[in-house]
Length: 380
Image 1: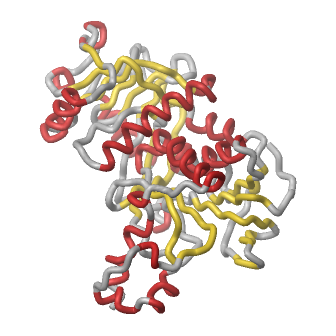
Image 2: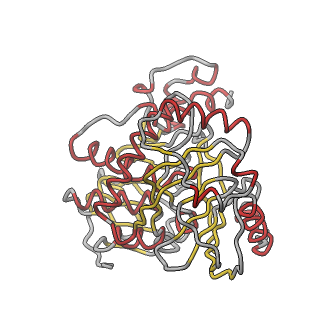
C-alpha cells in the first residue's frame, strides 16, 4: 500500500471504514488522485467488526425500502465482480425475531421480486422450535464478505496516511489536512468525533461485537434471526454477530465486557440452532453509526453559523429552501448506514463518483442538511 506524498490530491477521504475504502476505490478507478486517512488503520473500527452481510432490508414501503432494494442489487454485483475472493455467496434465511417483524416479513415476501423459495428440509431440521415457528423468507442468493479483507483490498494502491486529524484548514480554495491538500474533502468518519461544527447531523453510535468460532455444527446458509450466524471464507469458521448495543460508548472511558458480549452472542444464537463443541477464535469490536431517521447520509454539509447569521429567522421556524443554506465548499459526508454499511457502500460511492466527475446532483433525500432546520429551531 502506497504512503507517498503526492499532494495536491483531487480528493482526501477521512475515515477508512467500508464507506471510506469503497469511495477511495471507486474514485481511483474513475481516474481521480485519492488520499485516504485514518488514525487507527484500515477497517479498524465498526466496519472491521461488522458481519458484512449483503442482505436485503426487510421493510415496508418508503424511501428507505427503495434505496435498499437498489443498494442490495448493486452490492451483490459489485462484490462478486470486483472482489470475488473476499465474497462468499450462500443462500440466506431471514427469520422474524418478533411478531411485529413477522408482519414485515410476510408483506415483504408477497411484494419482493427477489428470488426466494421453500426452506430446504436439511436446514429446517437444524432450526430451533422458535425459529421453525416464526415467519421467515429463504433467499436463493445471499452473500457475506470478509470485512477487513475487502476493505484492505479496496485500499490497495491508494495513498494511505495513518494520521490523527484534529483540524481542517481551508486555504487558497483547497482543503489542507496536515501536509496534504485537495480540492475535495470526503468525511466518512462514522460516529467518531466530528471535524467540523456540524452538531445538527443526527447520528446514533451503535457498538458492535462479532465473534468467529469453530463448531461441530454445519452451517449451510446465512441465518438472520436474533443475531446473524454465517459460514465464512475461512474453512470451518462460523461468524456470529454483530450485536447492536446503543448503550455502550468507548468515549465514556468505561471498559467493554468482552466475556459478557460473547455470552450474549452465543445465547442469541442458541435461539436459532444448536452449536456444538464451540471454540471462540476471535473477537471483533467497534462503533458504527446510524442516522436518527434510519436513512443513510450522502451530501454537502451546512455551515450552521454562516447560515444562521444570514437567515436568523430559521431559529424561529422560518422555512428556507435547502439550496439557500450556506455549505462548506467541496465537502461531502457519507455516514449513517447503521448495520447495512457493506450493502450501502457501493451505492453511495457510485453516486459520489457521479457527483464529483459528472456533476450529477446527489439525492436530496439523503442530504445531511435534512436535520438542520429542526436543530436550528432548538437554538433560539
